[in-house]
Amino acid sequence: MLNIGFYGASDAAWSGYSYVDKDSMREVVSWNDLVGTYFKANCVNKAVMNGSIERAAIEIKGTKEKLDIAIVVLGVSAAIPLVHCNRDIDAGHKDFEHTSDQIFNIHGVVTHPQYGCAKEVAKQFESQDEFVQTLNMWKKHLWSNELQALRYAGALMQLDQYLVAKNIPAIYCGKASRVPPWLTLQAGIVDDDLHALNKKYNRSNNLPNNISAVGQKELAKVYIKLIKEKLKI
Image 1 (cartoon, helix red, strand yellow):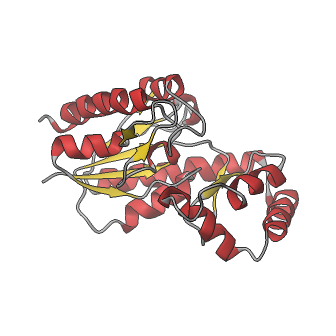
Image 2 (cartoon, rainbow, N blue to C red):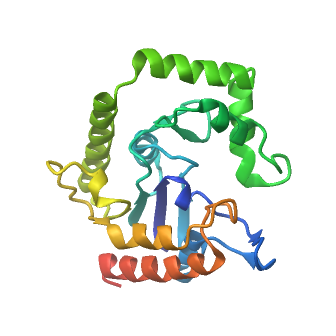
């Protein structure tokens, strides 16, 4: 049985349950669940909303299963870990008040498992105001674009080197431009076509990974093809 690992940002974070598409009112499963079903694989899913590359590196190193392949969705380079929560955040935002509204006041937080991350954030921070103040003070005193770029590149380099050392091939999904030109990834290449497909089928607030019902199937087809090619099966 194949062991497939999913890491990184929210494009890959929805797994293990179906959901009703608001447009068609039909039950839909995620592209990564479709991939797992196709290969009859054991899927390890550690992707989270706004997943940072640092979190992906930590989760890959902490995976106990021997992975046959790792799928890593590269989120925005400004994403930073909320280390005690099960989601991360894009620190590139200037308005953390708006971001906090999306997290703390999201509808369906009790009934839908994909919103469990909102409950985790609310447990960590005593209030929405504390959340906003913490991020504003952190960004004011501890943030620089250059430093964040170095953190991103360093974590991506370590992640890739770990996969190579463990002989785990990777499929990287994201903008190739997010990889510094001086950094050559060895476990796999960054697939711009996958990123373009994600953008094509992006439907904000439609399904838990913000990809349309049609997009789930189209992405699954591409990932299945790439996995077959990568593993020569």
